[in-house]
Image (cartoon, rainbow, N blue to C red; front, side):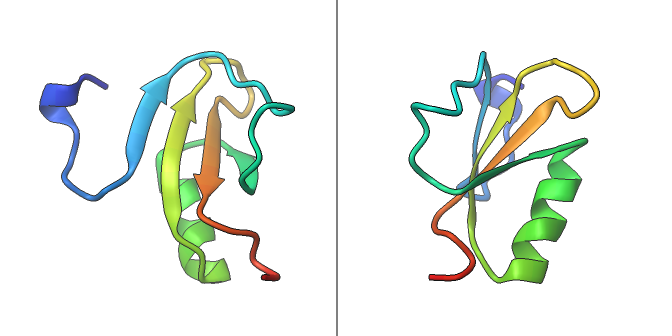
Length: 70
């Protein structure tokens, strides 16, 4: 998704390779951005970044502000 057509919802969206060891925030793989948003609502945590890795079967990485148990 290019910067020109991103919705204004304070969620960063990128297409890149994801390094799980370098990411210190709480993250989960998902099938789509909509699944990330659903996880966010159910767990009561804020979705801050969506990474599209383009690697199936779960190409999307949802990155959240904090761990749900904090």
